[in-house]
Length: 198
Image 1: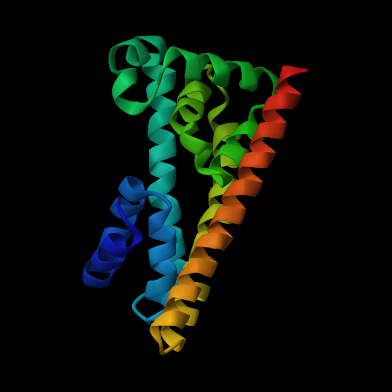
Image 2: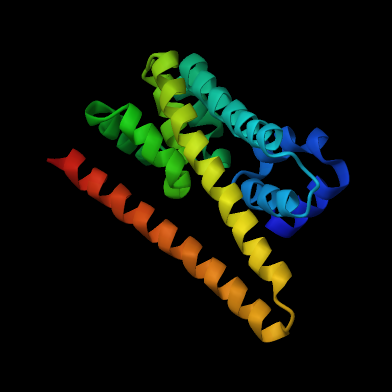
């Protein structure tokens, strides 16, 4: 779901849609909330709490699915949600070296397509739920706040420029910023993977 679609839903339904849209759409919700805050449609603390809650509901769900059904779920339904045996084996290997750090880095980098196996494996390995939540809550707090800030800041730039060339430049700067954040996260992730191999 694109940030524009998410923003349209938020502007129409406001707080009523924030938790479910964060659960379904993930990171575009934070960007859209930043824009909606700039436009004066939302209040900061309540919207921040709502998008954190939506994403954390998803994290808790994957933990309990892994905890309760583990291997049987991954064999039967894994291909539909990106859970392959190779992904789970890799996540188990990483959990042998890290637990909270792997969860925190996964949250801050949205897992690079590896988030669901990590959340699922945390439950499957019966990691302490409170340790799991501490890592996810910390990561979610930083991640959601960063996305809101990016949405707020770049919407401000976008709304305050008048010609098309400047608007295109602003969009380009925003995309470059997100690419740099993504690149740094990928670098940190790859270093962690290399360290786990030692």
